[in-house]
Length: 304
Image 1 (tube, helix red, strand yellow):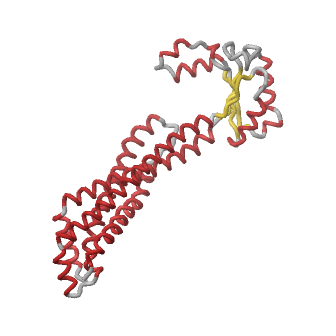
Image 2: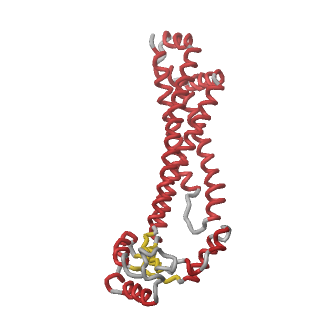
């Protein structure tokens, strides 16, 4: 097989259909960028779940003067309530599940609130006595949170017992929806890329029907005739894949590591090694889909 002839034919085909080839590259680039971004987002969600779930606490909120009367008929929790909660947390029944705990009084809760909402105008209207005094409980196994909740729910002077993971579940649900949306868009665009590749190869084959016929008459095999067209699609697909990989590396370097990691230093984010690990998969996907689409499109023109 004369590979120089094959590559020469591929070059001629690309030059003849340059605008279509560029379109294939751009569609492949955009669709695989969505695929890669969705993949990294799923990886980030898994990492954050592991990190935050292990650190999630159970909050035992004591009654305040402003608590609902049906929940806290006695008004603000007394020192006796604090002592009762402390004794239960130290008891042999619960101690085996608890890693550590600490108590946050009105003033400490107020200082924390002011720090977190210092840019919110509502903060200046909040008074210390309006905020719950709270026991924050870290568990050895966060999955044992229902045991703590059951132990303190309904206790006089306790307004609410809350597993902080419920807030995390809401956040991760939103992130999962965003990831699925990105994958859905990517799937539609990859389908569009396959159709565009097929159209490009068919157009190239129509323009070269006479050459194909002559090659068949002199005994060229189907594979030998197909190869330039397949390579035309593969080159476009691989270039689009590499551009997508470059875009993902840029997103990770500039946005994730350059911005998010500095704004949220207590959270682990995906990095360049994760993006590089994704690059071969993108290239295989782009090149593989292009090869399949091109081979399917050219097959009808190989009849004698």
